[in-house]
Amino acid sequence: MPSLAGEELESGPDSRAPAGVGTSPSRESGSPPATPSASRRRLPPGLGAVLGPAGLAAIVCASIYLALGAAAGRYVLELPTPVNPGWISGPLTSIAGHGNWLQPAQLSAGLIVLVVGYLIALACARSISPRMALTAVVFANLAFTLGPTIVSTDVFGYIAYGRELALHGLDPYVSPPLSIAHDTILRFVYWQHQPSPYGPLFTFLSAPLGLVSDAVALWTFKLAAGAASVAIAFIVAAIARERGLDPARAAIFVGLNPAVLFYAVSGAHNDLLAVCLMVIGLALVLRGMEAQGAGVAVAGAAIKLTVGLALPFLVIAARRRGQALKGAGLVAFVIGVPALVLFGTHFFDQLHRISTDPLFDTLFSGPDRLAAALGTHITPAIRTMSTVAAGLVALTALAWAWRGGDAVTAAGWAFLALIASIASFAPWYLVWLLPFTALGHSRSLRLATLLVTLYAIAVHIPAVGGVPWLSQARGSAGGTTVAVAGPRALQRIGSISSMGSAPASATSIRPVRGSTATVLGWRAS
Image 1 (tube, rainbow, N blue to C red):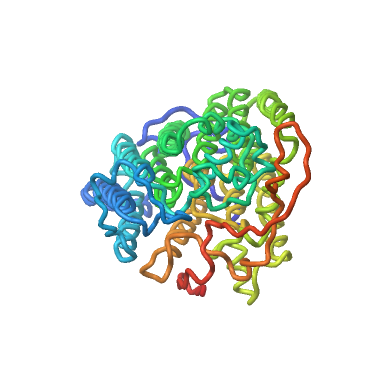
Image 2 (cartoon, rainbow, N blue to C red; image 1 turned 60 degrees about the vertical axis):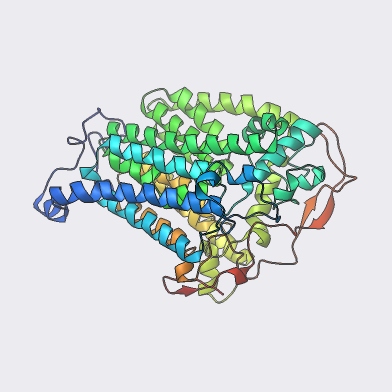
């Protein structure tokens, strides 16, 4: 990892303050001082004024194209059933038709335009107003929100877990979706044998949607994810202005990221809700509302636990760390006590399985690339090595922030290491990292995040031999069993029952043979 201490290169006033709080300068005053070398690196103003809006237009047009193409056919829909009801394809079907015209070549072209537009917009961000950038964010996110779920069907699992709790009184951390075998949602769920891996707050929030129709539940999740993605961009832009950074560049970096749009927003992933709460918490902490901010951040972690990695950095960033700890403890108590009463400690069980079970390993994850370089598959030793390395980076970042370094930048490095260490990596996990990178003062961190984004998209572009869906890592398929509740061993809330075993045959990860991509010199086959 590059030296953290030398990375605060693009900052406004008070960039070294632990809280990262300064005055609220304009975009111009928040820019780094002009130097001869910096001036030579900048595009001519006239060229930037043309290319910047063109990049935004390319992103919006590519988003609309891909969303319409997804609605017109099944190529990028990952449904475990031949049934494809109209309510899944969504409102864009009436515009896109049913020609199934989005095929590998068209998908590749759309993704390439999306990526190129993103890079151009970032390069020309100085020529783009925050209003223009945020308008593009709204339209691009709206396109993928109104389109069908692309690649992942996790959202149907959200509905199934909510229905288990609300309609059947089952504990979703013990009873997998297969426990409600006759429910109409089950045919759309891949992970039928897997209990919920999500935080207790998300389970509580999902329960009401278990009482409504499949269509209403799906599109409520879709709209919530799209709104959360837009909100993240708006909040990040506001924080960037307060930290003396370019709000337009920050909004583009987060809200128009190709992996976030194509995977996170389209798939209605709850990572967006968790990160939205974490970013709100960060904004409150940096504005002196430490207790409220830390409490909101804990709520984000209660949706997806991995997002909680940001919490210690938020506490360090707080001017009154005691208040931050009190707020975090209060919210943890309010959420944790009902969760423990209803579910016990079972909401940690599936997280452990995902981090250790080869069934969940994905091709092109950090541990998979390390294993390929060593000529093997992901072994327990490689998992341990990856986890230890990420832990050391996180501890180093914490220590640097504690000694006065920028806590936001430090959090970005910690999340980058975490993402690189996860064997079950999925492209939408990048949303954990993006806000902290956009708001940090490290050029190296921004470059690394851009490279990871390009990598995550490139390995899934059909034009270079990839496939849009996730593929299992080598050596991960077959022979894996997980504990599930059998038909006669369903655990209801507050009851005790035994557990059975069954093969985890349903998975939303394609077998390794589904991808033969050659990217950055690596070939997977």
